[in-house]
Image (tube, rainbow, N blue to C red; front, side, top):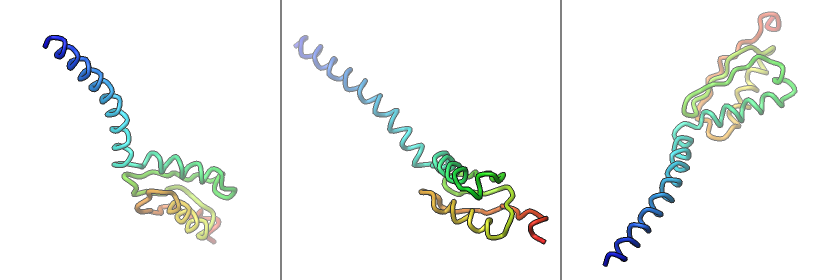
Length: 108
């Protein structure tokens, strides 16, 4: 009987240790599902940086829970529209608030 209890305690201990490792990974996954903003921002920033037109422009991308916002300046109204569409193309974006400003000297 004592041997059975020792074996049971050992099995439960190993199971608990393995379960804790799984919980940590699961908590990270849950956090990403709850607020994917970090991944969206990283993907969008890389996308804008690689773009020959937007790579040199001061565009800030931020958001919360997939509701994203563009801030900064572009040179033309067409660039403002294109930037919004580019951000919409990033997975898990739920909405885009496009607060980009068209520079005054280009708007004339």
